Amino acid sequence: MSPTTRGRGRRPATGSPRLDVDALLRDRGTRIIVCCGAGGVGKTTTAAALALRAAEQGRSVVVLTIDPARRLAQSMGLEQLDNTPREVKGVDAAAGGRLDAMMLDMKRTFDEIVESHSTPEKAQQILANPFYQALSSSFAGTQEYMAMEKLGQLRAEADRGGTWDLVVVDTPPSRSAPDFLDAPQRLGSFLDGRFIKLLLAPAKVGGKAYLKVFSSGVNLVTNTLTKVLGAQVLRDIQTFVAALDTMFGGFRERADVTYRLLQEKGTSFVVVAAPEGDALREASYFVDRLAAERMPLSGLVLNRVHDVVAGSLSAERSIAAAETLTERKVHPLTAQLLRLHAERAQVATREKALTTRFTAAHPDVPIARVPAFAQDVHDLDGLRQVGRDLTA
View 1 (spheres, one colour):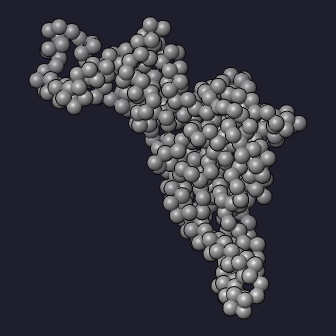
View 2 (cartoon, one colour; view 1 turned 180 degrees about the vertical axis):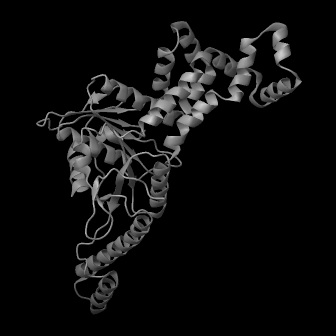
């Protein structure tokens, strides 16, 4: 299945259309850019480079990272990042733009939801509950759900005339890229599901009514849960569920609202991949998923691409020439350079074959290529270079 892209690319004479990154960033109708893809392909660096380039072209940008490795903070010269947006110094503001950066604090975001949708007394009860503390810190899908929550908050603030007109999101590192899309609904379904309602029943009835409601079948379930979880854990869960009862509908409702936000014209997805088999398979799956969900895809950023300067010199000829020099015991440095060239040419050939497989399946997806750097990006100048490569 090929997605319907937003017309951001211009097709060259051959190959896939080119992703016009500058057109995407300058378009004031673009309010959200979501960078997604497999882990370890450079999503964080790509998100930061896009945000910096947009800011230096006059946009007011906030970039939200979910990367716990803190690479975004380091590359932007910030000592730390947290749930509060911080202005990035050193940005060229000649065009009137600005750049703020923040890193999702999953638990703090969950706490803010509880505090804003509960009375102070009930909020304190929930925050102190052991099951809530475990849920808000490590429950599967919580990070992705809270990323959605924070995105919704930032967009709402922008719609109210706030500081930013563009939000760039670096999606969470996850087992599978579409987890970012699926997890909020999974968590919302869990919090609004039959299991939770079953646990909530004891808090809604008491005494003889409790015994009546919990018939033999329900008693069997709770007895089993007690054996598996332990009586104290089950009580913690029931206490948490009872305190959170009034918020259940809100979790699913907010997840649905943000999900619809991702389908709007003002949102653009940028899939990031490296020219590697697993990463491109994940990218292909994500492209198909975005099409199925009718979410606007701008294109693919193919990161860490290896190019060959002397393209006319094949790996085979290079190896043969190196062997000849070695046999004659002359020009050892040249022989070593020829072998290095052959290795790079072989890598480039393999990457081209993998990329061709992706483009054959998705011929209409615009692509921007970023060459492999000799070292990691660690400052604003490095991010600017990535931005220039994205638009080269």
